[in-house]
Amino acid sequence: MDSKDKPTAGKVVCVTSEGNDLEANVDPRFGRCQYFIIVDTSTLDFEAVRNPNISGMGGVGVQSAQLMVDKNVNAVLTGNVGPNAFQTLKAAGIEMITGVTGVVKDAVEKYKEGGFKSVSRPTVEHKSGLE
Image 1 (tube, rainbow, N blue to C red):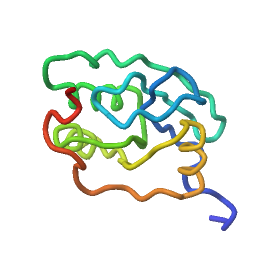
Image 2 (image 1 turned 135 degrees about the horizontal axis):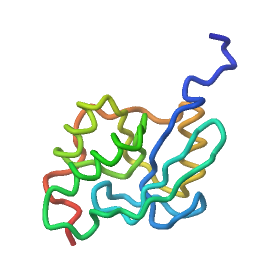
Image 3 (image 1 turned 180 degrees about the vertical axis):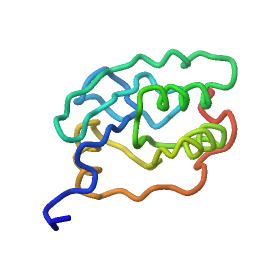
Image 4 (image 1 turned 120 degrees about the horizontal axis):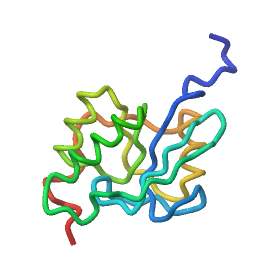
């Protein structure tokens, strides 16, 4: 591979979001985020998916992770990920990046530049997104 090639080009990433476009702020929650912004990193074409699990009583992390599998996502960019979602995403081979803040589009650009490191364990405890 040429050194100019970005290894993340052509991947599909999901950024948890408080709004339905690339200018929205990143939502720090995975399972209970407002929206999932599914982005093609090579074109920045995106799909905004309102989180159908946001008000679920339980299992929302696993259900949201399964949605990522169904959408053929390669990586998830979010603030935090709980243990059940972590296990489901890991089993599916989906890269998890946490600690993401700011605007969705900036997060995607930083990802494309290799500015994030994957996590190897959950970053919050069970049911931490409940408020």
